[in-house]
Image (cartoon, rainbow, N blue to C red; front, side, top):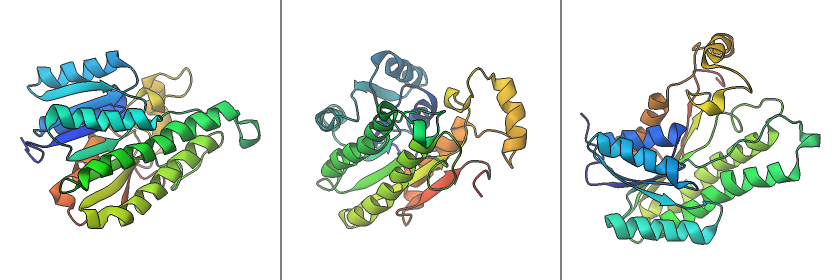
Length: 253
């Protein structure tokens, strides 16, 4: 059992399901005190229950990352509960898909930018505000292989938002490395979550599709993506700054 994050406090946004839940569980398994945040309490409580059942420490906090005051209050609440903030994983995101650029609804465009880009900006600002006053830390933003690395028809808005996360990560990394804060990104491809299923597609059908779509021949497991996040957040990656680590089985190679 690895203990890279013993006595560390980790915040994971979008921690109620999918990759966010897997990331939260992985940090807890390595000794971290984990704060999971999101807009809905019930799935966050489920993540906390899973962590506690495995002997870990966690607490749920409801917040909308697209609202600056809520993000500032979130970080303050985590610090008040656990005494600090050492690592943050900005995973909260939304997917709106299926239409070409000319037909992309304004509502979808704004929702993608508000959560996926502005939400990451607000999260970075609140997290960095604490970390640079308390000796530094590590931040990992969850982007996507869709955006800076690959594009698909009907996903322009999502790709633009995630490409912005990749660029924002690099810019923030340069701005704040002298504050003792390492900032990096992970860009997953299709992983073993509901988000990677096409409309009406079963997991079996997805597995068959991925044999042709991915050089690796399958989706990534959530544990594989979580392992990449933990590496970037750990001292093992002490000289890794402004990286965008793609985890997609070679799809965007």
